[in-house]
Image 1 (tube, rainbow, N blue to C red):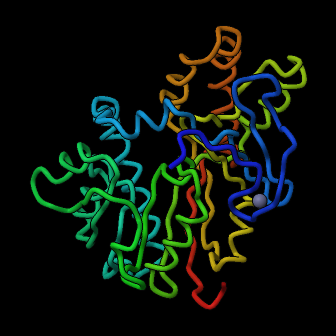
Image 2: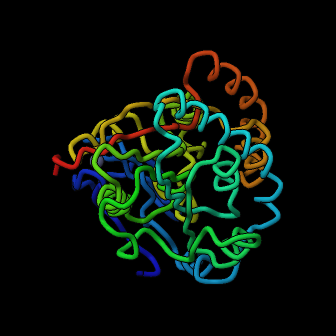
Image 3: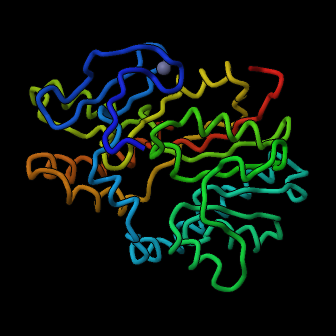
Length: 294
Ligand SMILES: [Zn+2]
């Protein structure tokens, strides 16, 4: 993989785009596809980020602190899926980016058949401490065509340099009518509507797109999800959910003092209003795979 990657086209729909949406003069730019509204950072990643991925670094403490809230989140999601699909109990599930195994733990509680994979060997070791259920690796030729009923990817797709490649691999290993379940931050939220307004009144000083070269490389929108229908991904659920408020406020520590003050005042108000109007900052999406669509 290149250590730094410029990208002047939309990874999802292939649209060429060189116009800058935000970040003129800053270390990186944010581009937005005029066709499907996907946002991405340009360059996609930097050398520092790649070096971190290649190293043994992993934020065990950070993840362990979130264990109980994440498991609660997964239980609610599984309850929802079970209401939508009565046969879900018999399905074979692959959890991509299985981390410390929280989703796999919850699957065991529900007596569901699931296995995982993750690029971080320390995370896999932790996940497999009682029994082997995850492997070090990504979604690639290790997995046979049509071999799973369900793929679950929590907080993953926004970090991948080439999400379309990932989506097509999911389609390949899923059975026809199989389910791809993702959770990812979205741009269609009240936070981002506020941020756009903030751009204008602060003369573009506010940077709260949640897109950057060392983390969330991409931000998906409802329009991007709809575009995926052209590749055989039919949306059967697209629900908005809020990040836990503590988690969002914690992230303001990394902002400049100007942005931090604005965010700490506005986030609690926006968080509440977003829940009220269905404009939360994350999308929980279930796609059904149509193998006959190219
Ligand atoms: Zn596009």
